[in-house]
Length: 378
Image (cartoon, rainbow, N blue to C red; front, side):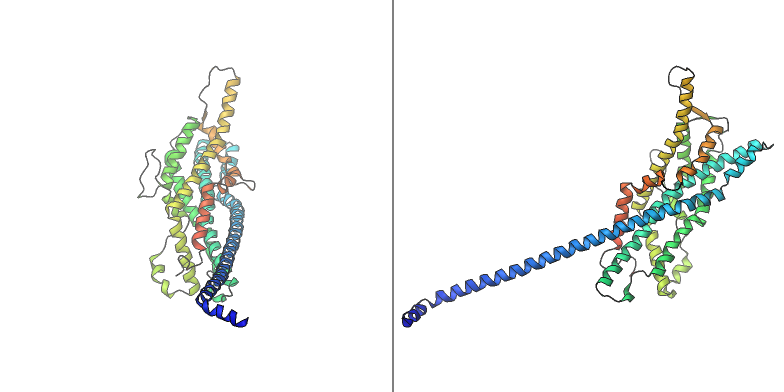
């Protein structure tokens, strides 16, 4: 019996070897495929987990951005009300002084200047803080990855002390930057609004056009041209209000700075590159469009009220509603309490919810949170 089996095996030896190879190969391939499938599933799960962690970190960072903006708006309001104290002029006018006309002229310039600077300051705060906090947010995410992988603390992208010094640079906007913005806006208002008499009748469209002329002067950099509407082609003229100009002496001495100071200078340099980018200018311009449109809508309520009053007197047709400049001034003067109000602030909320602002923030965060050598920190 055993001999017969053995003879059978010898006669079909090659077939058995082939079958063994096939079966063994199939088992090996099955095991290999199973291993690769498990590795692929683990990789996909790891990527999903990382994406979820990154999204959670990004969402938290955006909430921080929103809270930071809202917390700084009252500071902007108080600073503006101190530097352009129209309330003092109003108090003097109530005392019926002999130089009443002169005070009204000063109030006209100051009221328009303050409301326009408030709009500029609010929009710049929203977009500039989006840049700064998302740059820092990107580095913090990289730090969290390094710590998760057990990396040394020495490779932290931006230490907390540097973050604080970097974020403190926003104070330039509320300090020297605001001083420059007030000066330039006042000069533009003086050129455009100063020639309008207190008795001159203005329609809402007249007011709208006057504001656009002021914007054109404030926002246009010397090298900028004008688009077909006569408006400034970009908002590059506003860059100087956000960060101080780079000094050649500091650039030359960069190699002699401490490591922390070099990191800070790199962060500021990257921020400057970002705010000079087309994307930043586009987003800021869109925010300004929305805010100035809302201002016209708010002021338009007073024109509508005047139109309703005229209609109630029995006039036929739809008259073109106009208000004398003397009546427009108090309306403009009070707008700062709307633009820079405490929460809920409809001006700021509208800006924070704009899709272009959200997309821009996501792009900045993504650029600085890549798990590779971070931009600007070579």
